[in-house]
Image (cartoon, rainbow, N blue to C red; front, side):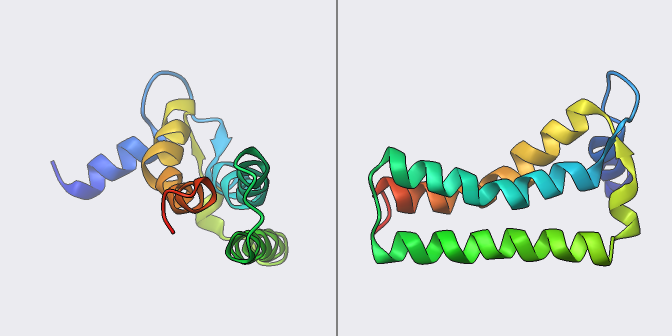
Length: 111
């Protein structure tokens, strides 16, 4: 099997169920939710250091600009629909690791 066939299968058609979630929803939720996640971690670990604020502002503004870009210049490839488990795979394997550095910083595990 070619890698592209496997990638397409995992990204859009992983069973069960029909493809009903636009890939844009999964990506936009992660990008825009990153600032809420980081702010929650800041409060949870009581980390309001200068570095924590800078990290929060950079990723929060990135999420806002991402959404502005999506609303003004939508990417047609993000309009394709995927199954629920394909969206979960996208979050866990691709978008999830993006949140790990923020967790490490806010929790004090990476100084």
